[in-house]
Structure formats: structure tokens, C-alpha cells
Length: 552
Image 1 (cartoon, rainbow, N blue to C red):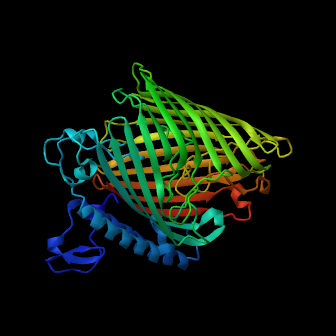
Image 2: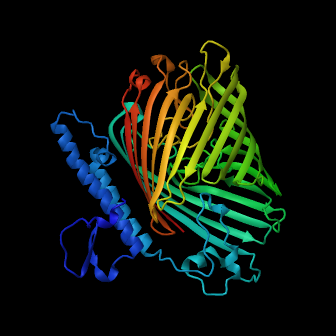
Image 3: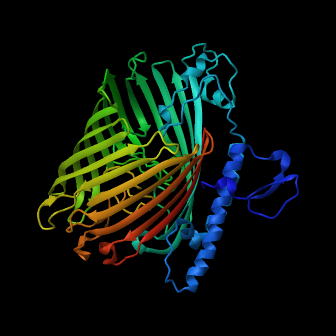
């Protein structure tokens, strides 16, 4: 992808009045914009990688498999036809989107799109005197009959396509190649009715095709309300907003490792409940109590039940000012988690668990840190829970160099069960952590793992970000097994006394074509260690993800 500009478009030579694309020639008068052309070049490269990989597979077969190639481009060869078809489809969608996403220069630079869209504010457009472009009209729609600039409606949305190909998924439990083509559509409306009240709604439609043996619950949601809440502000004139929010909503508390929005899968994580945010000076507090929404495939059938998962908590934040530091922040949090049924190596049943944690993050010159530690207590059926976990990340920036390289060293230690025969559960529950915590294969959650990681990042081009991550994984306790996201028991610890889980390698290339369109290519390779090789399914797992996203 770095050398996208040096690759010719795929296809035969065409007359001078045509411009070549991966979908065939198009008339010159409809030639894509530079941003669109960049997208097409990226899609062309993805298709060419598939062509190269197909040739590489034939060569490896002729040598009877003696040469094992682990280059990510050749990994996709087993799914050649599906990868090529997906790349063509995505190229077509992005051609349409980016051709209409011409960036006009507004009077005030627009804010960046946020991970949770309700955090965006377009109130500044009410003071604009110059004509607004098409996108600004969508972001600031005055309500008829009201002259108050504080009352407006803001529209936005997202179209995302991703193709995921995996080989020997779940350590070989799903043998061979498996492709999954996923599409997600989000549309939201933010009605700001005076500085004191707002109503936010977001609809989702998500489909999946190709996963074996069947789609996951987080793959499909044909039409439903992803978010639907009302918010009342206490003091809108304060530097930091104080509010109460009631309804269906996504919850994101800073950079907490245990509470993410599940962005990777097709259907994001949502809660039905209430949240209150209070801020004063350098301190802020969040209170929340909610039920986890269980996604279903039908229309408007997502719900929570009394025997589902309940989650509540409080987070106390402090942003001190210290000489030589920036973005310094400390959080103390308490989470309360209830699950009607969950299974661990030693026992299963109803779990009621409390998590007490401390997080500190900030930056001093080229150094950056993010440290989090927590302990857990509670009950699982008749068993007592005593567990702990830490996640320590230290980074160094070379901002003076043109590619702006960054190197991050990580160490996380999460407990497993120490004794199968006692009356105590020591397995740490990672709650709502990222499913791709150890890379894009999403094989494992952090429970009962010790992870040493190294992440190298750089920006070789203005709109291109490249990263490579290595994770070395061991079991914390040999008496406990392994768990898949979010916390699903998948392998007994009794198959081997080895701690060696394996190595995970992840290469990511992300291109921001413009403010609206982004493209990602992610390759991942999990190399099985001794503990995996001793089990009933003992293979490594490879994966390739091609993702395109259009936001407005």
C-alpha cells in the first residue's frame, strides 16, 4: 500500500478517452476525484495481492509444502476468489461514496468524527455567516419556526464493508479457509433542543455472509435501534458538561481496558440504562447502571432480559497539572457485573463480581504511559472470587523524524485459577475488553494470560499509518485453560503442563483517503505454542481483513 502510486490499474490498455478502474473502463468525463482515485488504487493493490498469492500457493504446492511462507499477502491465496470479489465490491462502493465526498473548505474547520458519535458537537455552525456546504447542512438543520440557534438537528451516519478471511480458525477447530463478507449501516439524528435537552437516536442494519457453521450474534442485526436516549444538562455554561442520560446507549470511559464499544465486530456493544456525568474543576465522576443489550437478527427485537448481563459502576477521574507532563489523568473505578450463567474451568453458574481498579496515563516529552491495575472479588455459585490483572504500556515517540515513528512496549498479567480442587475462583473476567486484544484473529481474551507485546507504528505518508505488533503469550496458571472473547471457556488446562500459548504477529495499514473515507488492510498470524499443539485442535491461525468505512 505504501507504493500505491507506482502500481498501474489492472486491465488491458484502453483508448485515451477512458480511465481504467478495477471495475473496468469508465468514460473520462466521470473520472474519479483524487481521493476516489486513491481508493481505487488501494483496491487494485488488494486484488493484485490476491493474484500474487494465488501464484505463490501453486509454487508451495509443487514443493510439497516444505516451504512455509508467512507473508501476509500470500496468506490470502486460499480465499482468492472471495477476496477478489470482495475487493471489487468495496471498490465500487467507495467510488460512489468518495466521488460525492468532495471536501469543501468551511469557515470553521469541522471536528473529527468520534468513535461514539454522540460526542460530536456542531453548535458552532449556528454562528456561521458564510454559505454552508452540503455536509454542513446535514450537520446543522434549524428547526422551523425557531430562531434560537441553540435548537437544531444534526444528521450523520456510516457505511462499513469488511471482508475477513481466516485459515484454521480457533486453532484448527474450523479447518481450512473461511471467508466472511460483512456490511454495516448506521444512521443517527441528534436533536439539540435548547442547551438543556437533547435526544439522540441511532439505527443499525448489519448483515453477514459466509461464516461457518453460522453467523455469530455480533454479525447480524437486520434493523434495530443501536442507541436511543434522552439527555438533560445541568449547567450547559460550565466548561465541562454535566448531564443525566437515560435510554439505550454506548458507554465509553476514556481508555479503560475493560470497557470498549466492540468496534471490530459488525454489531457494537450497547446498554439499556442510565448514566450521570458530573465535572468540577480538574475532577469528574461517572455513574452508570445498565443491562447489556442482546443483539438479534430480526427487526426491532434487540432486548435485555432479567436473566441477562447487568453492569453498573462509578469512575472518579482527576486531571492534575504537573510540570513536564501533558494529558495527565488518573482514574479510580468500581464495576459491578452480574451474569446469570458463565462457565470457567473449575465451575459454572451465576456470577456476581466486583472490580476495583486504578488507571494512570499521560505523556512527558517523547515518553507516554498508560498503566492499569485491578482486583476482583465476588461469588460464582457457591465459590468465592479472588482475581487480579494488570496492563502496563510505555511508549516512546520520535516526533522530529518525518515518519513520526512510535514504539510501545506492553506487559499484561491476568490471573487464572490456581487450584481446581479448592473453593475459590481465581480466573480474571476481562468484562467488555476488546475482542482483538491480542490481534485481529480474536482468538483469546486476556483471562489466564501473560502477554509481552511490542508495537511499532509510523506514518510514512500524510494519510497512511502503518503498524506492526508482536505478542508473546503464556498461560498465567497451568491449572486453568483458555478463554475466547468475551469470556467463553474453549480449552481445558489439563491437556498439557506447558505455559507456552504461542506468538501473534499483526500488520496493519490504514489509509485516511479524506475526512469521510478510510481503508484498512490487516494481516494476522498466530503461531501455535506447545500448549496449543498438545490439544485436540493444534494448528496456528491466520487471518486477513480488508475494511472500508465511509462516515458523514
